[in-house]
Length: 258
Image (cartoon, rainbow, N blue to C red; front, side, top):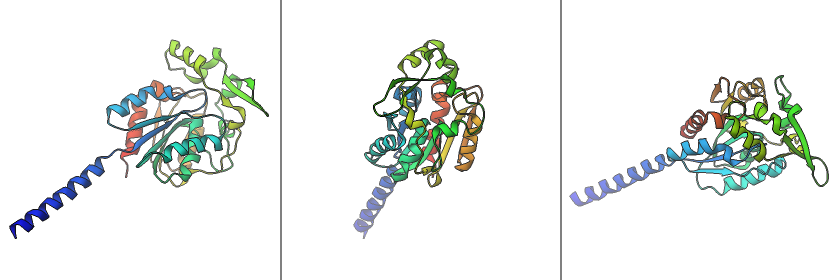
């Protein structure tokens, strides 16, 4: 009887330890950059997440079109074993809203100064939904694309004030040179899915954003019934660069949510 009881106690202890270990496993954080940026825009956030023990993947967003970009990100998410927190900045929010629709392992969406279009809406359309954006005047086409349209850039001399007003000047200048263009058609491509309707979302943005009006983001967050909203006074469009701790903290809040 003593042996049997000892064996049973050992099995129960092993099961308890296995359950505790599974509960301690952290979801993978997949970061999706937006237009006029690249994966390095997440550097500060990545450092915080890695320090806290989260597995992190920074996706290379093609910036060619909503369907194409969502397929690329969706393929990446599908390759991740276990739960995923999908994070999008700016146009990256449009991409994750589509990519997560066919990704059952996505447990949370985090929108960082980002779009969350409904079906039929476009990123450019949402930019002008409420007053406050000065993006259109700062854009310039460059290098016509085969077929139709062109790649869009933010003019280098306007980049700092438009995109990264609270980032040190030297870094903003480098960002202006290194910016990745958005295909013109991508900004006008209508979304065909909206994962935020079924997947819980968390939001953060800067109150001095000149790309997406804060009023627009507040509208989208309310519509998505956001679990939590954080606004940063004086912060620009690249709040993940100027306030990486606040962004990482919100991502970790989403990751820990049940």
